[in-house]
Image (cartoon, rainbow, N blue to C red; front, side):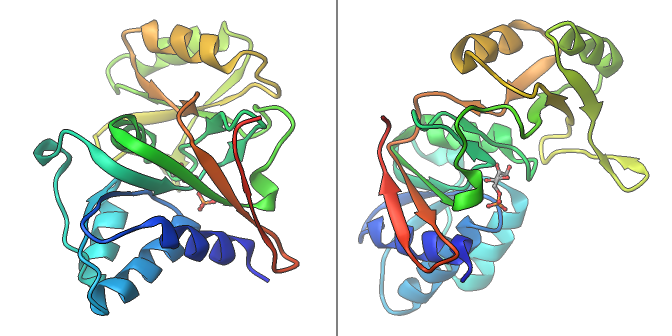
Length: 223
Ligand code: 5RP
């Protein structure tokens, strides 16, 4: 069975009438958003805050009323996917390129629930290359600085073109192998002027809903 679909649909049950809901980006939360679209057609009243243009388009197609982040001070609940989660529910995100908006939305959310299939659950973070969003100006310098942290930094491409985020920035995927201290790495990265944001989400997730190919779904809290 599709663990992503199982997890994504199950997490939609946390959404209640009247909520402002952060809508994540990716192929797992896609199923959450599809379910919410169904519930909206049945009368659920919510307002969504999308984390990417892709999610915005999907939500609009489904008739989910949307708010811009600028219009809210607080979001009741955000549901989003992840590329990796460790036992403390520290995450790597940004495989889909939406890390900056995802982190902004999650940071003003009272609750943040992660949806993923079993492949995302890891003993330690870092096998998945850490996405770092950087300003285009002088990106080669920023890449060299990232390399000094002991990773192999690779500029993200979309075919023959440089990949450009919804915010007009570039992404450098940093191959660390293992990340020992996610909090301190995140702080170090964000101190550099060329770095806009990084894909480490530390101490943000309340729970993870994990879907398994055997058809089961499990919820885990930080250890
Ligand atoms: C997008 C993300 C996604 O949540 C992450 O890449 C997981 O995606 P998927 O659910 O498609 O595996 O961070 O920027």
